[in-house]
Image (cartoon, rainbow, N blue to C red):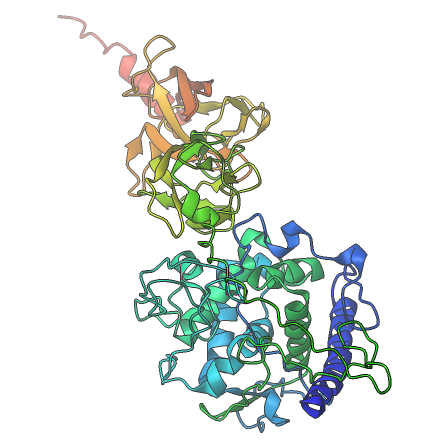
Length: 591
């Protein structure tokens, strides 16, 4: 045992060196907001806060329930750089076994990176980070032990999360994912606990299912999980916060960063099932702690009988009377087991404008039957109803732990464009308690003022078209009101707002006259109307523009009569002919 323990210490020293180099490399290559001491540990000034690690945001147990992970670090020698010219004739990069990633697993990481670049471009997710986490969590799905569609051939399950050496998470999925209806277990190549997969799960291979045992689904879900809360992987602080939210451990952070830097220097594809699987876990693979051999105690040391005087036999000690073992006390109930009901805390209902984020947040308080608040209880908030609204992380489910006052606040709501009512439902994870519903409403984007951007007169000759295009700007409380619905109508008069049947008009796609248009302001609140035309009726006319929210602007249009063409002067021949025709005929004489 001593020799084995010494080997572990020597290996730990090497691993610490690798971790230090990786953290230093990350700090040098990204924003300068991470420092490290000589052993690769974060300094006290840079220790992760609750906000960084995810605590207080429903991630107190991380995506994995803080399950054990592989602690092996990459070798000090870097892999050969991968080819960058994209040519299929260029030989694939080769390197150590640790640098090889099974083909299907590598494909899943790269496809997840591409999907996230479209869905969450501000996250800047590199596939190497997904690969680093996949290696630390499952050794790249057990060395690529997956089928052609990416599903693990043998299920990958973490230990039972029963509070013995790990988090205590009662069953949340009735054993659907992990086969355990009493406690939860981390599942699949990215090791999601069922309660996290319930909202973070994704369909990465397009088969219509969200399966945590499928590397395509799990890799995409891990990417979305890491990118929530608008964390940016191109910044050190954003990446650190994201990794710590996956597993709240600085050792875990350093291990992942070490593999990230290793993979960034080059990887190569290996056949499925032939990948290198790490051999050391954070729980030594069993959850046990090595026991050091006992050391004999020196004479005279407290607890060792002193020898008697020379020649005098030592008095035999009186054996102690057998004691009655105490009755085992029943285990204290967990905080979750003491919850009797939920009460409103914070806003009970919310109204948010389409495209904006709510200023208030719905909240709930966990209480016992006697009305005492309960801390450290996980509350699941779920958006229910026909809506495209999400929480600020882009998800429709969030799990939040109650604070010292028993209160859990849901993330702020980010409204989409779909208006209407929906519900934010709060439930207690791991306990059957009546749900608490919060009403929410998304109202249409609105403007409270309209103003023309120019002052040129709006005039036109009958039968022609207006040379000046009408453009207005919509605002709401002084700020530009983008994407607000508006209606432009040629009305009969200031007192009669019905649509006019003569005068100026717009043209539809077929070129037919129309005098009412439904429009929408652009992102900057600007609204440019189409060209206006005039029929042959002269006179003053009115154009009325209205928006959602009550903003109104009436503009005067003037159509002038067309000037008739002047009568041309007669030609000389026409004048002579005209004169001749007017002279009197001669009268006969002598009659």
